[in-house]
Length: 276
Length: 164
Image (spheres, rainbow over the protein chains, first blue to last red):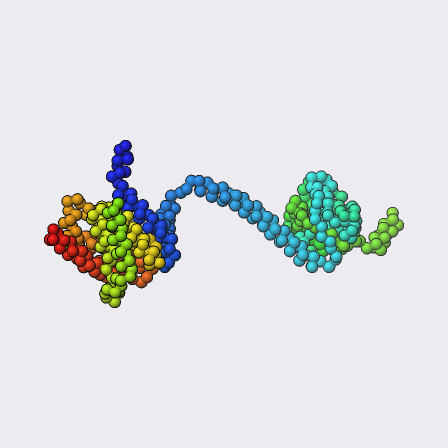
């Protein structure tokens, strides 16, 4: 009752307010210069008020924004990782391309699809085979140096013995002093250069390359560098060599279309038999 | 009811005269004319109070808007405010005194000022005119001119009282 009587006292003002509101509604139905100007002022005022209130954080909006940002972050991380991968691949392929242009023999590029690095007979499986002109005995290399030799082929795949295989022995020489030797794996973790006499000039840091004496590899392919020089006995040196190729991270390799010369092979074979 | 009709008829006549004849007595280079509808509205407000004053103001203003075919609602807004203001002088003991004295001229002046402030301020939005220009060129001259015109009903009212 009190409210009603209070409203009754305000009757004049309520009616007046209603009339003013109706008038304003009618005014804003017009589309003339004055109303457009008033609307622009209203928009500015609202903008100022809203910008004033915008410093108060909206918890729900923040939560939503946070979720969105986290999702975006994950997506961007994925993209970044992919881009890094592409960059590395690009770099690798570029180096391989440059190397391909440098090498005088024909080469076939293959992806390494299988790798064994924990046995005494370590091998790698390549995604290329006889269809790609890969044959047994062909050298496998990278742009850094010698990897190994093809030992088995099928139409689409091939297996290569790598330097870290006890069965693979490579005729090598010191690039600086031209001292010859044979590179083989000691079965533990190091490549050794054997048959080097104690008086030979080999020092740490010397680059070891394949020699002309090899019937399986073209001469001059880099193998690695000398890390330490010791003595086995009174006759020979014990030379440790570190391969230029990092077999743990190896992803692609080239097969060099190089086969040993049959005539040379036969001559050497016949001579050896006669000597016996 | 009959009294209401009388006031409605009075305002209707004033609206028609305002829209058809008042331009003939326009003064100054800004074509200032008296607002005779406002004089009638002040009369209704003083006689009937705030509610009737504001309703009469709204309806007469709306009629003026409709006759002018532009800016519908602007005159209704300003006349509502003026009618409501005139209703403040609705004092049973002083109605006749207000209407027959020059106090009526003063009431008309105040109501006219309020009416003109609403009307001309909105009307000149978006133009180069600043408020002081609008005040000196339109609000005050119109209020003064309307107040001068409001002397006429005061003279008639006084004569009527003398006759009685």
